Image (spheres, rainbow, N blue to C red):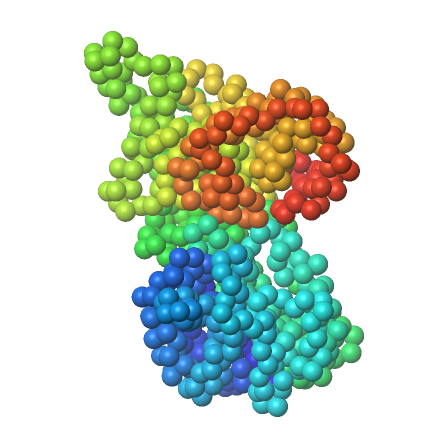
Length: 574
């Protein structure tokens, strides 16, 4: 049997456009010298994912049904494709959408079964897998994730897993040794071919990593799609394998910063293009965050679609302007210079006249950030450029930002990336080509809103801060647990009760700001604006009670979802 895997990148809701793109691919395969006997696409290949509230829309489900019928009529090859179809609710309560797999063959389609959307609702009809016969082969199709260790597919010749699997770090990818090893075991245990077909692309804050694989019954990899790219794989099933080729094709695992860079770039690309934009605008401060954001955007969109804006103010150092200019030259992007001195002087004069003063020390800092946001939004509105926010997760957690100033923007590529990892991404990117000036990497971070300002005037060193934030935000630990863990896993810097309690209290008080932060891609960590879900009006203040948790903190952390780094906190660890 000749099989093709189509790893596609649909746009959520663009049902007809998604179907047209898939049909175009099928037509090309059908017209090739050796048309495949079966084509397999990922889950949600026609609808895109995640669907969220669209599952409750009668209009969307009606459109999905129309497109499914049209697709089945026009599909020129036997095809497995994921879509959404309406399912009637009990007692005439209407309909709800359920992701479903269609089997299209010779212009006819048969619904195979329903995927259970985790955490949303219980489907009325649920099937974890179905089995069909195709060209003398017994084919089992899994509709709800990879096989369980107890699943028995020994009667099947082929096991197909259709997925919309989110990228949550390199350990979750099929390129990871654990994931690939498990699929090898499934193939060998069942003496069956295993095809794991995954969606690719980005939707808002979610990234699907692709990396689909096909394995022979001996566990060898026959074909492997690239991660974070659309691709079509074609291969034969049932041919004898040559001796000494037990491992088959080499699947290269990605290092964390390599994978994260690709995921963030894909998020920028798909958010910009799928929302009808072509270009982005970024404020270049000469700092690490704007430098990494600009480099990501250039890799994702091309330098011709990225516009940098220099907005020096009364406290901007000459070095910052030179560093931003050097960065832009290295990246090959167009820049504009819009100083804020004039508008700032005009505001100051107005406030002296009306208020009798220029405002508080804090107000005089924040108005500079807000003037810069006005400049950026003026350009966005005038030229149709999408504004990318340059904030990071450490600053967002601590409220170290200005509302309606440096929180402006539609998308914050680094909004769920801690500051130490921003440096890690920068070093990784410079390993490919040195586009970020060394001066940006080495200088102390500063917002430059008053003379001599440094981030460490208001925040602990980022290496210490990020350790506390990671334990608190990602793992849900309080003051006592963080102190106990830090005593058992020292990092060279003592964590005091006062320091930990102050950081956690600052995070609590900054909740109102985070609710107004831009959308940010989630790469296996907790989203500060959605997932954490702490109340804004919140009188709870954590403090040390002298409690020692039962057992070792490491044992507790092993059970916490998302725990990645029990040690080795340096940003260059990769």
